[in-house]
Image 1 (cartoon, protein in one colour):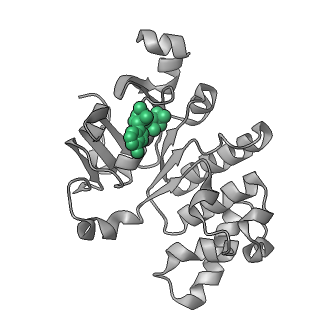
Image 2: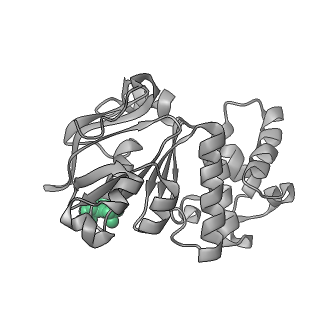
Length: 250
Ligand code: ADP
């Protein structure tokens, strides 16, 4: 099956099998299959409207497929009650293009990063926040600032720190650097690559920027009109694209 290059099934953290999705009666994701291994970076490219963000919403458990199944850690993740999903929710985290949209602007950076750490004893939370700030290359005193006082790059680092807090196995990055200056983009991408290498976090990396995907990803899926039209090792797809659409894109 497509997406089934995986020799070691036990290392597969996310499996998407024949998934379709619709808004109302309009199907926008059509029979998509792929899997994501521990520590792997999978790129998802395609023009605007091809269904990339809908795939992100499906794997985050925010949208239900009309067909097919999603498994997280070998357990049913789609088509189950929220109550059953809840214990696994922290295993998969999102980094979006504009993290400020989902942050309460009145909260300090420290509070924003601490929020997903409710399972930790209160006394350990401040230490973990400091550790996370250091992990993403931010000074500890930033904990008392508010997001609007930060640069775009700093805000994106805060979003990454917040996402890493619960030690997820999968980070869904939806155009994570598209809103940043080019010079800052490279720093944030290096940080994501470093996290992937050091923590073994799997990345589903959604981007319309093929250069970025080529630089960062191991494998890539190319989407068009809701379907995966090409997939493979990133070098292979970029140097020997097979589908006319990919040829055009490259
Ligand atoms: P991409 O991320 O590749 O730009 P999307 O997954 O956002 O693609 O969108 C896929 C298709 O679904 C587009 O035609 C878009 O207009 C449509 N769409 C996205 N979100 C909604 C929604 N909430 N309601 C209705 N249609 C939507």
